[in-house]
Image 1 (tube, rainbow, N blue to C red):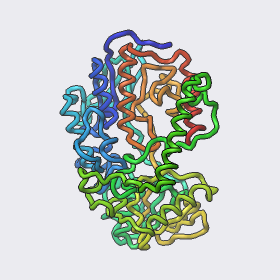
Image 2 (cartoon, rainbow, N blue to C red):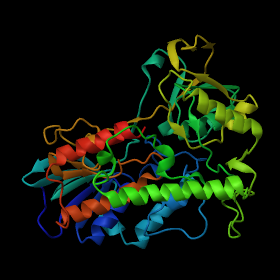
Image 3 (spheres, rainbow, N blue to C red):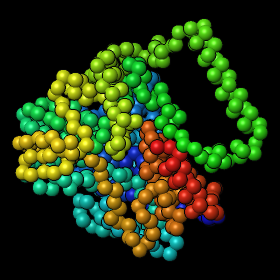
Image 4 (cartoon, rainbow, N blue to C red):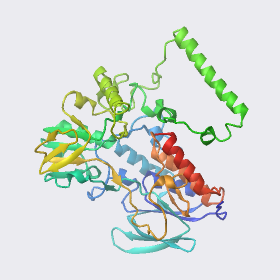
Length: 475
């Protein structure tokens, strides 16, 4: 069992996006000395758009968050009123205000890029470079926490290496103006790809969206009143497989009282639904009709929209249901991710946006051949939205032995072989806010490094058990 010496530590945090920002806050609350380094001119990470630096990954102009502000904002600074979807710019403003509200800025070194870290004794030497002057400095810390995020370097598919037209990547997308009147191919699925496919198809001469499989589309306002995350829980997303009960709930097999109460609760719930909703035909009450909500989470008229500027229509529902079926039980292709964004649905229905399933198999000149045998010719631009590489160039391979899979870390954070190194912001929910998970991770790290809690004695076995549960119990 690893327990750190009691008392405050000197901690370096690399990256000051939302995850790095909450790490600074939680470490300060625990009494640690913290220095946070970020190469940008302002806090916010990818949410901050530097008007003087167009060569870095950042958010685009017309985007909204895919979950509402209740789960994207931190627990110690919750917004008032019903949940709503922030624009990317509003969320950046929230982060800046958060840094001022809790006086965090004096612990943050902006325009200071960490270029190298090196194990030194029981801690870490951190070398950082000033982005304005180029001057490098070095400081020693007890702990190193990495919060640089996973949206750094865009991936490019090998299938378009020979494409002779223009290739753009999602990390540098600003708006749809460069695509006006052009023939555009959008590659990849996900919330950002959905936004870009929608915006580009509004102005392009022709737009085709190619993805590996039909995605499960979850509108951000599924019942036309409340956001998705207000209506769901992890139980809706976990497809439970057969596991030993002891692995799922330790002590379950030996605890008769626990088994009795769980069974009794299930029986009562079933009887309640059968009696009141089946026999007595009680009408189901729609959530979200509370008097305090005057508009949906996008500020639109209640009861009409399932997403931003996307009306709830029978055709739209049928398309979403069909995609869910074709991409699930009826598909032999690799499953696609959930898309918590249905704003593109209207453009598919009105034939502005074409969809190809299966992906690209070959490219010659400005012609692309898809895996289903169809061909798109005279393409002007390929817009690539297939994700990012997660890299940490400032970490030396000699200092850590880790394969790069965050599931190999304790709580997706602490390196078992080097517990003075941790990652914050890489524990991701199936559906929900990464910053909230980062806040909880930072609290655990703060207590761990102050000696108020310990790492498990058999940390490698615990990590492996958690990894197996995530991999095989829920998908």
